[in-house]
Figure 1 (cartoon, rainbow, N blue to C red):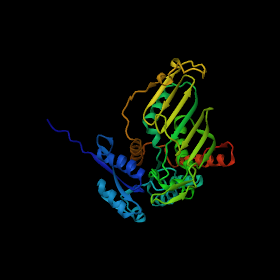
Figure 2: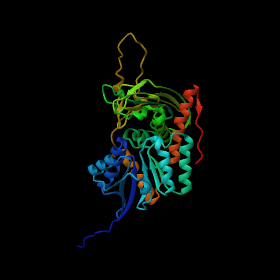
Figure 3: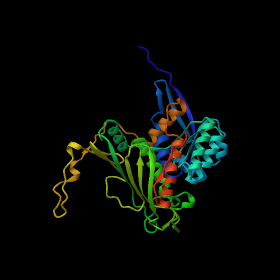
Length: 390
């Protein structure tokens, strides 16, 4: 017998990874996505073709870059972004910098003809975020924005329930997100200090409404209007060097969104809340035929036929154990890291042109919702969210 050894073509994609010395960039994008893809042998297009990402670490601190590269066996790193953008072997530019730095660097990369993949928010204003989309479109480069929560197991299970018609007519979505971020005086703060400085791009509205926009648009229906109240509950924190500073950014936001079809979604987002729920993010979805409660990984359902009939009587202990009336949705498939899944889809998009709807226009929509949410807060009214021109 002859051995059938097929020749496998490896499509190497050089990726300039800017800002990966930070927690999110190093853990989720470098280690759990790009390096994990390399360790599995790349992204397989067919039995005869595979995509292999080749990362080049980019940043401002040479000591941090060298240490990160050595720790994970990455061959190349540089502090010279301009020179790196001139390297024809690197066809993709990835940006995980702070929000205030993102738009100028993405513009540079577009001008250099690089395909763009970046974290959100894509800019500080809708105008700047939309400009990135128009520039990329005009340049003819492929582009995408990280929208990781769409590939979380809990949300995938929710989407499957919707597609199967489990809910009947969707009525409402209630989201609870957040946890206690320590001030930094006695216990170290677990978020960077710029998150709490408005002048540096910090704001929970700017950070989280970008997430809520793509979650709502892709799972339940397009956002049409927003009402929002926000606050800076903790006025003083301590930075990475133990120095106190005044917080100028909102750390909590309480919003209601009107979706297409009359669905009402309300989201509480806070870095000043102690968690007594199933997960750091929990969504409850109610419909005429059933309800579901989903966290990051698990999802529980209660169909109409299994819904109890409570009667209000505060003078006695409840005869119904409400938590017992929910059924856990089983894992009917394998779930990979959400960031890695989207990276694989983007690499397919770059190499083969596979559809990738999560582009810079979607990133601009996220910034737009944050901007409209802030306007609603400042003007104390409902604000419409108009459609951005594709």
